[in-house]
Image (cartoon, rainbow, N blue to C red; front, side, top):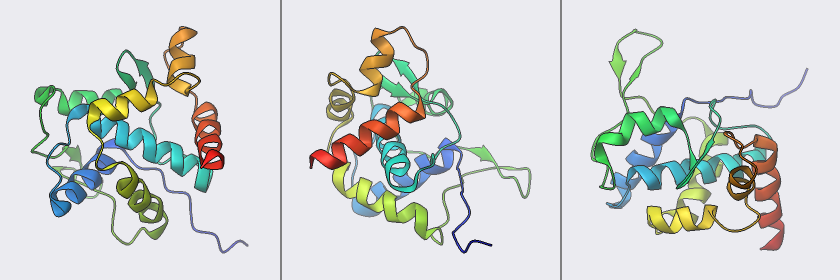
Length: 167
């Protein structure tokens, strides 16, 4: 039997709330719907590259402004291009009530990657992060050029491994 930690894949809303809580703690006030999408995409990519499995249990779609999780789009669309000042609501699996849920601080595997991604990308605007995802040869650009709705986790993982090797 292996001692490795179990693979935990989170709902996008939990990961989004973790970023929003960290932004609040650090006084970062520019987290828009676009920025939250791109932060989670970067976390997902780095998580695939470092841990070998996805961090969220939803597939990224290749929308015109970059990779998007449609469930999060619907959670935050009322903010449009402005700062998100609330949190994503979800059904608590324990109580069945609507609640604001985030990833437990006890999940060291998650926060090991999360903290590095946050430090690397927190100072970028949503537009700057979108520009990064739009570079030639990115998984998003490949999906868009080839008329694909979804961006495969394999492509995302390979891309983040490539950029880690280039550093």
